[in-house]
Image (cartoon, rainbow, N blue to C red; front, side, top):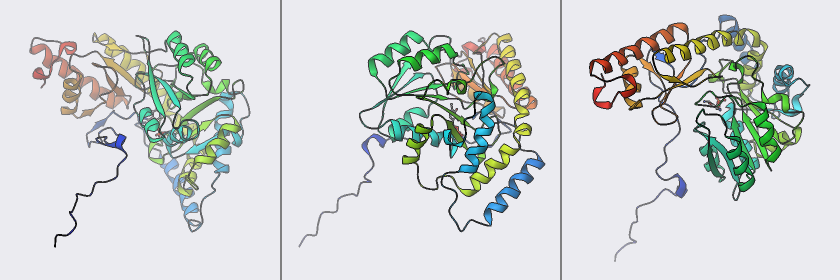
Amino acid sequence: MTGPVATAWQLPLRPELHGQVPYGAPQLDVPVRLNTNENPYPPSAKVVADITAAVSAAAAGLNRYPDRDCMELRTALAGYLDGEAGARLGPGRLWPANGSNEVMQQLLQAFGGPGRTALSFAPTYSMYPEYARNTHTEWVTGRRAADFGLDLDEATGLISRLQPSVVLLTSPNNPTGTALPQSQLRAVLDVAPGVVIVDEAYAEFRRAGVPSAVTLLADYPQLIVTRTMSKAFALAGGRLGYLAASAEVVDAVRIVRLPYHLSAVSQATALAALANSAELLATVQALRTERDATVSWLRGQGLRAADSDANFVLFGTFADGHAVWQGLLDRGVLIRETGPDGWLRVSIGTAEDMRAFRGALSEVAALAERAGSSLTGLRKEERG
Ligand code: PMP
């Protein structure tokens, strides 16, 4: 008697996930890490002590679930943002999660979904299509203008035609560093039929005079601004992002969030960090200065560098960006291969990090010259 034919068991993976790989930049152990837009300055001994004390107090109650609604943290976040918003937001209009990544996914869970469209404008943050995929939301990207700004005619045209339930704008944009003028944001808000999310992960680095979308919250109930403590606050390891919006938006997100999504340890850490805002944000000015100097230096080398309101600079253009990236990595400097073809992105580090970056890039350029080429003409076969 023959038994049942053993068929190879197949993992019942969703078809659209076949062949996909997890998102993430290389985490390499090199001396100079300028590839994920982290703040290069670690917390001071005082901030470490404050966070340790707060976490220690939270640890004593870890047998209980944390405050599901994160009220103390939301009140502190509102306090931080009130000044910029020019209004008292209050905890009801703030919502935190594990990084602005989670905030964004919750927003698409609430406002995207099957049969719905989310619209953004490329080049932009490469995680967005993944939030859309994970929430079965159709993802459409329009193109940015040649200077990486929004092409307003194209943007408003696409919005009118597609009627997306979500428009996702990024200011300053990653990987280009481009800020969104408020007049353009208003124009988008005036035609968008659904919610308009402005991802302001890098807002604290914007140049003087560049406004934040939070100042428009009072005028537009469909506007959602997302922020993070990962960048300016130097708390990437703490995983704390948040949104500011109308109380109705917050209520909608609370429907889809997992219960107790933000651990007591995360809440305590963020509260202690917020209590040290002034000290943590004191590095922002140094990073801005270093950024502007990096843009000038790159341009002085005959390269293109996009104007940046963030803590990174997109520069190029290279015939073979990968060869330049590899040349830098060979010299201990890790940057990011992202953005349009031929461009690379460098995060702004300490003055010492940036000296190493300039030194390594100069060496790669010298090597190209010796091979009878130039940095912008550098090809794979000429790599050192
Ligand atoms: N938005 C943008 C534009 C980003 O670049 C990043 C981080 N690279 C994030 C959101 C997510 O940041 P986090 O989840 O650490 O808050």
